[in-house]
Amino acid sequence: MKKAEFRKIIKTAGFSSQGDFVELIGIKANTFTTYKKVPAHVVRIANLALLARNQGASLEQITQQLQIERDAML
Image 1 (tube, helix red, strand yellow):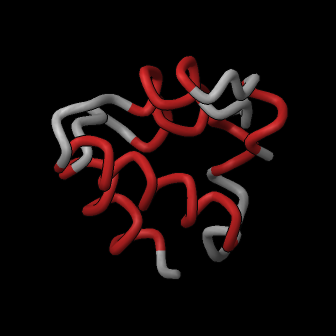
Image 2 (cartoon, helix red, strand yellow; image 1 turned 180 degrees about the horizontal axis):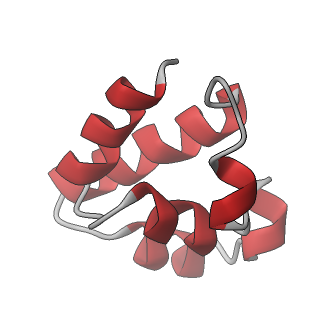
């Protein structure tokens, strides 16, 4: 996925920036900026965040409910 499309997904999911999103899932923002393409596993997490938002929940609520630690998302 291209970064422009990724940014659109995370904005729609309620994150103010891609840096905020990737920091939440355990990737340093400055490391993420070096990626040419968004890794597939990060896209899946972003889509999960979007789905959560559409259902009236947050990504944080889902990970807490499922007892998923941040490092396990990667």
